[in-house]
Amino acid sequence: VRVGNLMAFLQYASMILIALIMLAMTFVMIPRAQASADRINEVLLTLPSITDPKEPQKDSGLRGYVEFQNVTFRYAGAEKPVLEDITFKAKPGETTAIIGSTGAGKTTILQLIPRFFDIEKGTVLVNGTDVRKMAQKELRAKIGYVPQKASIFSGTIKDNIRFGKEDATDEEILEALETAQAAEFVEGKENGIESDIEQAGANLSGGQKQRLSIARALVRKPEIYLFDDSFSALDYKTDQKLRKALKKTTDDAAVIIVAQRVSTITDADQIIVLNEGKIAGIGTHQQLLAENGIYQEIVASQQAEEESA
Ligand code: UTP
Ligand code: MG
Image 1 (spheres, protein in one colour):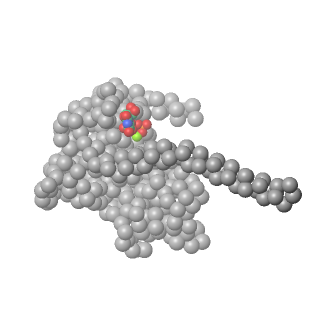
Image 2 (cartoon, protein in one colour):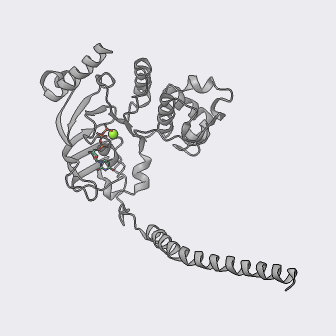
Image 3 (cartoon, protein in one colour):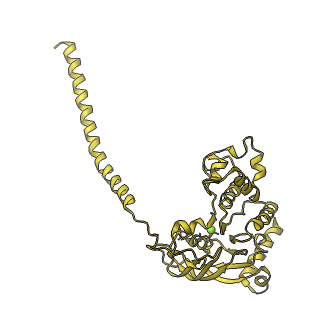
């Protein structure tokens, strides 16, 4: 046998071997691809559980009214309802605050207003109309929601604010930033509102992210404002200044604030004390301080914290 023949044989043999290995690998991949395709189809074929009514109700002409009537709600598959028999009213020009320990259901209450979930019992009304009888787009256009965790996207500051209102002008954006107490740090940047923000707001502080997220809700000029613990990362002074500026822009809107700090809500028109999904009391700061045990506890624990700090 000549060396050339031997080399050719080895080359061909290894080629065939590699092809066989590839074939075996394909057989491993097929069931995996099948499973993935099934899952993708499942997601694509899922029907949303929240749907618009066939004939949405006409606008009632009211502005800035939110009402809960004996609302009970549980998350899908949960054993216990997270909210039970919640009843309250929020009116335009008034501030309603919600306070309560972690896991009490504060965020859940806010999320029921734009109808992120459907409730089990009772009624959620916006401007006197059941939210299930409204077109979702119209309902959500009335609401400015600042979620508990600020979502900031990569892009310019302007882009981020425009998520609230696509065609917002520069003046509108600056006005919203001013009210949100964010104008100062934005103007301090080299390119102002055209400054770039990194993905998830990596080059911003927690309080800066919160204020941009507030400005995004303000630029919509909604009739219902929902703030979910949106002032927690702000220092006491900024918190106060922001709330004072808010008062001016929200004078004909309903404002619902979830707060951890009692100082944020002492001047609210009504405070709802939430305890394990139930309302433990509704009243002003003075009323609750005088007669509500749970509220007294919250106030006392925060005072103790301040003293030890
Ligand atoms: P919330 O998220 O409404 O509580 O959850 P909260 O009052 O706002 O709490 P903090 O102050 O932000 O921490 C209320 C309950 O609902 C359950 C949670 O486990 C909690 O006990 N939950 C929340 C779910 O089961 N599913 C969810 O998607 C969210
Ligand atoms: Mg929450």
